[in-house]
Length: 359
Image (tube, rainbow, N blue to C red):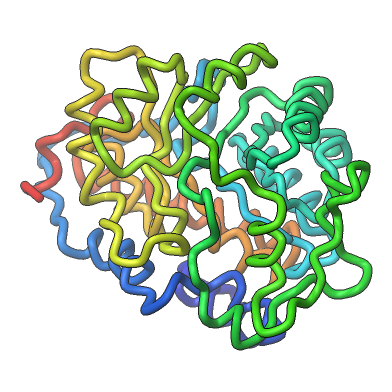
């Protein structure tokens, strides 16, 4: 049977994937408290719906960084998608384009950015990790721009990798035939097994720059014309610093609960970030725990312009490739449409703060 919601899809993916791959995608850091909190926080929020509103015609369309999207759900950057399906990132790009939304492609993609953009029918943004070798980083940025990516999404919450204990137990690594495709030209494409550790942890420790700081944003903006999105914000003061540094948007994100365990749930800190940025010309996105259309509605009401979903896309890939990823986006769009109708909010402009009961 076709899954009727994303939680059912996750169960199907668990059955379809090798344990090591499922655990890599599904796990959080340490006790996975933040991983659970991201989801539980939505369930604590209630919707104070309006009645006697004409909702016979509904439109979830919006824009992100000036780009029209069919509904306010973007595809988050997730690494190593070919672990889920042979077509990996190519299937995701096609599904996102068909759904009328943006795909954010990970630096740690198992398909090169050029190949992904070539098959994409919708906008692609490039998520960036900053390598210790800044020439390599600059090369990634220039390639993303040349390939046709429309924004740069800088991840700032991973100066070192969180301790993902499932990956340590499984000695996670990429199997033969898969690589960090974007880094193959620079000799950084291999992610091998590490003695007593996760191969990804060893890769990050060796290559990703833990010295990245606010002063580097000027350098990054100097080497690209692309709008800069800062991903990994949970504090209002950091959000303001990002705006003052010239960022076009921030993503309220705790890396899906995979970095600092016991960090706050993203939906809980979203209102504080939105309040702090009220006087700034900057867009706010959110990820972490989004599994229902009502979650999207709550995020919009609390100040997000759009949300990003990551793990559900992987569950879709694992169970049906491009069609599975498309199912994820179709389910979320259908649920959001229903939530808007029942909440008395026929357009995203009608999704206002008063719909959500005080946090």
